[in-house]
Image (cartoon, rainbow, N blue to C red):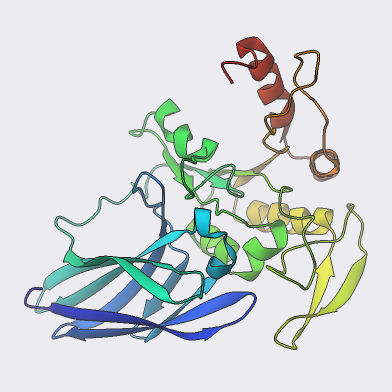
Length: 311
């Protein structure tokens, strides 16, 4: 395609119930090769935080992409950077998975020019950590975290949406997504943490993302599909880990209750059934002395104001 980047080939190296490992073969005359893999939004947007990174390696590991339904398969973009003689080039290839788990390239390798703009590292940042209700990449979906940036002055603060579809408190940590957010945090930043929609899933089947109910210290040893053992904790335990690790960096954590579902009663009133996960989030926030936002109630109030037909 140009002087440094010539060809890039993708193949599935290994796949199990938790993740898929992709081999990346690149033909380049450059050095300092770096791969970054991003989920691509329904509008073509990419968050500025990758789901996988590799430097001078030939594989990338992505969590649970092939377990999505065919109607809402996520799309990914791999951005490759190479350097030589002070010249830096970037290329991008986009792909997804078919129902058999094979890679389907949706956009062939092309050069990126100019380089994507980087956020101002000197400014404070507002992070969003959660699931698809905050960042969606299925068909006709968009999360509230995707819309949040427009409400802030980008000359004063970075809004970094790090939410990922289908994740729970447990899988967000296990897939390394949380560790990458921690690496970006600095003193004075704020992180909004919202989980619960996927935490009630199975412990060691399917996406293996379920957690134990409650806020206690109970644990359960489970055997994963690949035969490995994992200790699963309660929903509250995982939230407390998020809070503790955030505070160490001087970042302010704020817990949120769940995004409300579009449910209405026969009387035309919005159904305000509050989930246990919202109650547990509030309990953990209170116990840890951090702010709690009852997003479920806020959305319910707004929906009733708008009315069922408009919602």
